[in-house]
Length: 300
Figure 1 (cartoon, rainbow, N blue to C red):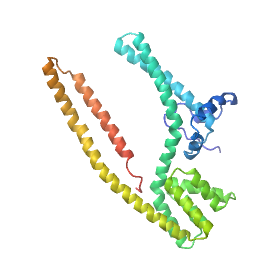
Figure 2: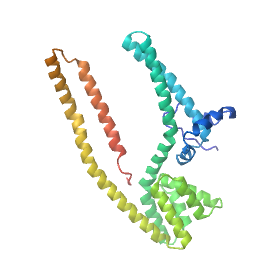
Figure 3: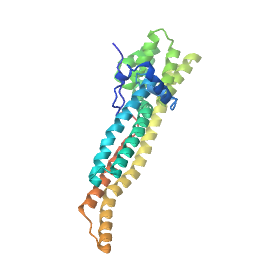
């Protein structure tokens, strides 16, 4: 059965269809791939199973579809504002089309790097419990391979997937150190990378893997406690900023507009009030998303 390809978020052209591109069109994808030298490795780390040239070509087609869509969006906005399709409408159509093309092309090209960092966050979230389980199994007399095999079959999310690849490489004839080296080069998680290299060094030096893992577990616990304390201290500041934006700024803004309009002799209409409320809501949602992104990746 063919391996399933993950389709990146907001890409309008399926990557499964991109695998069927003719070779004569791939020179365009090769040109785009030279703009981001790390894209090939980011695709591997993000588990997007496609050649870099075909991915770049699919990104270009998706960006072109977005540009065509935003031509009609610009025409609609221009017609509403000017009530005719004139120079302003045509200019708005062109600006939105070109901006959406380059914006979505850039987003598609950097998406694998963003996705690989997201996978790294998922690894960090479950790695502590996985290492504790491995430490218990090694202390009870199991070999390193059996411990990794048990982790790959357990419910540790992305960590189990990473170790399943290590077990698969070992079963195919690769040595334990070589399989762990491959894991260290593949993963975006700095914690897992450091753990893998520590185990590799211990295997080559003939030291105790139990002691090495125990030291790594203690380091992870200390790092997570520090990240939680740092986030709690930072959250106090964000809470104050959120209250100012959500409560103080809308009321003060409307009050200022009322005073300014009374001095100037003009009135404040409902459109201005609605605009202030909508702007406040957008800023609030953006702040909520930002705060959620800052939540430390610890075990749930």
